[in-house]
Image 1 (cartoon, rainbow, N blue to C red):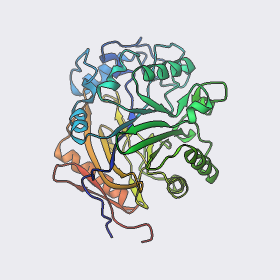
Image 2: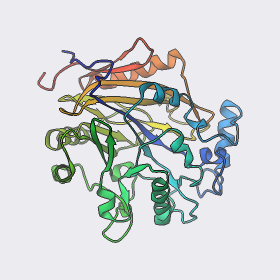
Image 3: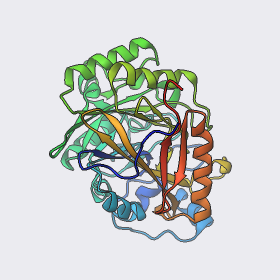
Length: 383
């Protein structure tokens, strides 16, 4: 039976904006006003400018330099319309001019000056526990943290030591309490084990596994920080880049976070395309939000997954219960390194794909009158 998720939030709900990987380095950094040295150390190309060329060969000229707001395109209109209380992104790009690149094949960075693009979208929180935030070494991470602090953007999942990396971002919401955001990475996402923060060295918050012991550790951490009416988000960088499969251990872990830690939202990412969503005991699980911004326009392979189609997630949470009251999904498309409106046919393709994948988890995706998508719970956990 379908649960009573509404299309609109009540006045007391906390509205979150969530998305997947924001990769504003390489080609995107090059078209912004103050790019880094374009030199790369990849097998595929040797300059970030090559990604601009590849995109132009596919879709035509990319303007440059562009204003910091350019890359967000139609997403800004949706953010203004939806007016979320907190805007949370997975920043998968180091903010630095460091030349201390990690020998790992692909390295993302944008200049500290170009990080103004984050304030152009009024981003409130960047989760940083992922497999690219130390692409330019510990110095690059420290530059990233310093830049976000300068821009007054909260961060979670990385820090100057283990304690800082494990601490949540605390986002006050006027009249509604707070949003606590915790960020973790797993090696299944390609995150090097050696990137874990230590007592004396900077790094990320790396989970060793998806065991019950890991759940217990997170639950204990949340219990120390939580206040009445806090909305708790757990952001997880996990799993492979391609494929719709949801490993059973991921689903068990997400359910356990809700059962034992009373988490309101599990915010999963790492896959380059969106995956299934679930509503479990009234709480939202996004198993894979997909990329949100990248410079992949001219790169071939995996076209059947339509990685150019990206999603904005707006989740309305009732703070006294922590439950989901409404979930809206807005499809957009990456074109010319910018988010634009997709065709009606592409929106319907996304709806069918998400509905197909989510129905196995008891949820469905329906079209709204506005032409956006809505997540509906088709059955209760005991069904």
